[in-house]
Amino acid sequence: MPTRHIALFLAVTFGWSWGFWAIPFLDHRGVFLAPMLIRLTLGGTPAAWGPLIGALAAALVRGGGRGVWVLFRRAGRIGIGWRWYAVVFLTFPVLIGGSALLAGLAGAPAFAGEVWTQPIAIPVAFVYILLLGGPLQEEFGWRGTLLDPMQDRLGGLGASLVVGMVWALWHVPLFLFPNDAAPYYGKPFWGLLVTLVTISVLFTWVWNRTGRSVWAVLVFHTMFNLSHWLFPALESDLAGQILFAAQFLAAGLVIAREGPALGRQGNR
Image 1 (cartoon, one colour):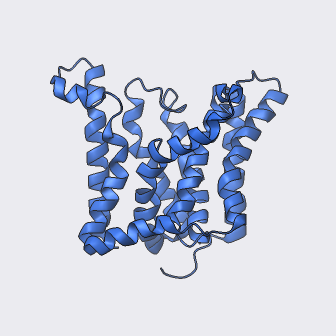
Image 2 (tube, one colour):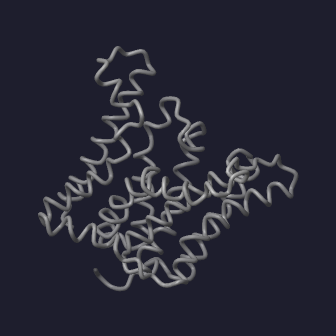
């Protein structure tokens, strides 16, 4: 992908998202805004759709309707094999739930997710998160559009670090006004930065090894968000520290196994 198309993707993504997130930010700071602008944030802001809008813009400019078809066709690659389904469904419950469990065994306060009183809500939450909780809005952008051009230039590991930093930077406005949408936003930004850069290695590995399946990373992202709801490890400092270490270990094991290419086979 030419540099100008990468620049277009980033400009549309950040312009769309940060533009809409500026509304609650300015309102929180006491800046008078027209009632019409305030209504844009009622019932959920369109800001989160920025990466998907950016991906569509880049696909249209690059290849017209066919470019958009190629982008969305990758979501249809669902035949990734049972081993990779195990990876995308179990990795984050093991890392996040295991961290919470170890912290509890070490004497940290237990923070049981409310969902465990009504487990039937788990599949409903999965679908909701997949469609409206981040994955659908983001993964056609971060992995579906940005990752491969970065791999062409920097290799798998280098691309993972860059995409992870862009992914984290995109979230910056959420730290600037009260936001209860996720466990990270009431904490220092560096925690999200370190986490997203680290797990970006895992996302690149899954992407490469599943034949660049958007479906695989959609599920992987969904399980990351869902696991933080099921096992609120970040409510405990000890569990959070264990989770950081566990994520580093998982990324390190992938790098040791796959090398810096992270499973990428030649140029694509």
